[in-house]
Image (cartoon, rainbow, N blue to C red; front, side, top):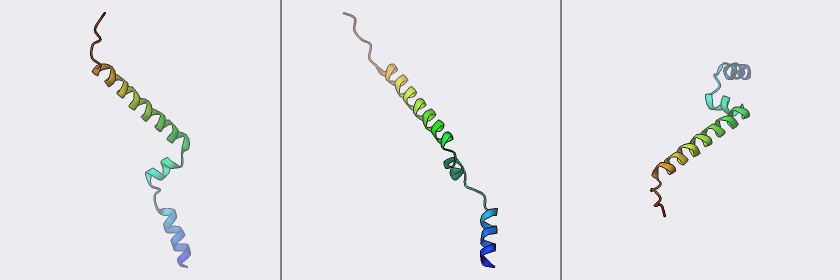
Length: 57
């Protein structure tokens, strides 16, 4: 009897958001690419703006 109650309780529980995310590997891949692309783009733009002006010969 207790086994059927546990199964019903587990089925009625909502799946956590992060578990849903981990169940979709292509979505994880896309998120990883977007985050890294954004990070390196922002880093590159900051590097360009913080470079000192080069003296002309």
